[in-house]
Length: 268
Image (spheres, rainbow, N blue to C red):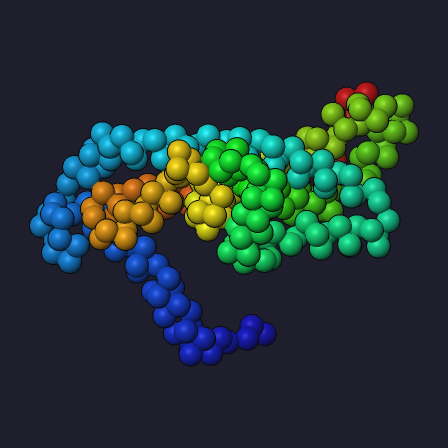
């Protein structure tokens, strides 16, 4: 017999959804407002999006964000995947200990992460710029990739790999034809999540960015201190759309990978 949900729980969920999403919807709506007055609707326009494309500072911040996001995602995906594969074959005690260390960047507050990296780079006498931002983003992005790929490996099992070894496949052949195709949805999903986290990050970047490495979130923060303008609403809307799209795509790829048949003909 199906249990009935208490009406108050449904009302609570609805209130929470309104509290979370109404401010986001307001930003999106007023990014199309044909006036600079935030609380006064004067009609629909795309002018603020067009002016963004002509703004040199916005384009520079966008370029910095894309360079940092792409670079950190590539390195974090490689390192996170290798870590997941390596810890798969170690003892349970060591794996639990290493899991705690690799989960730490996901758990600790961003401000602690940013401050610790600031101290590290200062002690190493590294000049703040794109390199320090990329290293910082690799530090926390790698953990997200590791979590997703590890979950994929856990659900995969070892039957196909053992069957490939029994059929005479080498370690590289087993990895290339069996393991990699099985975990590729997890790798792609982890990379998309890492890219999204890097693109949206403000707190860590704020601590380790230099004058010439301003990213979009830092640029938005600087502009908001002068007052919320329609251009900022438009820029935030673009970030929201990109972030949501990438997260949904990552979830779709991961779910599609889970739905695929595990047992397929081995190419040996």
